[in-house]
Image 1 (cartoon, each protein chain N blue to C red):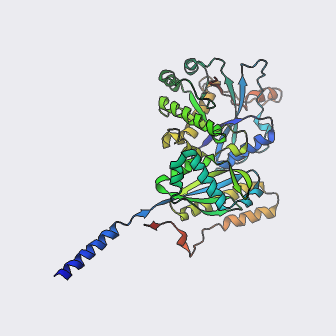
Image 2: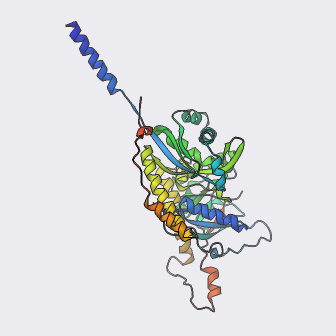
Length: 245
Length: 181
């Protein structure tokens, strides 16, 4: 069985709900999840919420269904772009994922040149499926946006994630792989969208943090500096730009 | 002569009819109903799942979906204690029905709405393959529950059930797969 990852679990201050979402994800078979902190720079005086250390959530992480290892929890940062310049975002921004906002019908079509540039750089496009589950109009926009994205990128470099706030909004990995057939992905691309592409995103994030994989930061064993090190070691942050309207 | 000829014609026609028999293949979707509150599971019955699935397919795929789901789609088995359900569809369009299952958000039974979702565990061509998968899956579940045990008695109970997990040979394999047109 491949490693399935769900890279978008909305952060809530309600710890119990977050914990139940992660437990449900482990039950469904996801080996890794990422808690998403959203920052909207357009609002004034928005503090960047400090990502909580994942060890605070659980004493022992729940075991993944079908495997013997516990689930791995990562942290992730989303930045809402103030000026949705599609071309700039794809070509220049130092990000790992570009979120395709599914809440509105996009007035523009994805142009092939920035999309191909992003694919070459290793940036992935993300489609979220929970709005489609919640509401019927959202479903139409999600499918429309997803299909237009697939036409331009030919199914490469796409990941599919939930945006789950409640544990009942998650879906199993095989269900999602089947659902993306509706988005125009082929079977192989669909399975890749939830397994190998997600892993590639994770590695891309690691690569940015460690200067192309050359430098690794190790946790310092000395008790004096331990508290300092804990702040940057457990979190694996990836920034992404959301195509805001 | 004529009598002999007619017998020949009859036998060739009979052979022709036999070669035309078509096998209706099905797919069995093995799904698990996940609820937030386990006591709600006992309220479910197969009619609730059937109507919810048909409604979801009709919402997602319109009249075409509704027409397809009226062909050979049924709920074969539901275990209210574990939440396991077998759905049977035609092989030609089981993917369409399967793609509409994630959109189910709640099940309704006798006026009560239970928020839940269906998680598809396995797709098999026969009930027997699904049963074999189910045995392996349940064994895995027991292994997962083992570290969470509070007392030694529970632990030994679980160990016993794991060791005794086998697929019994059932005499009534009549509810199996094949149908002939």
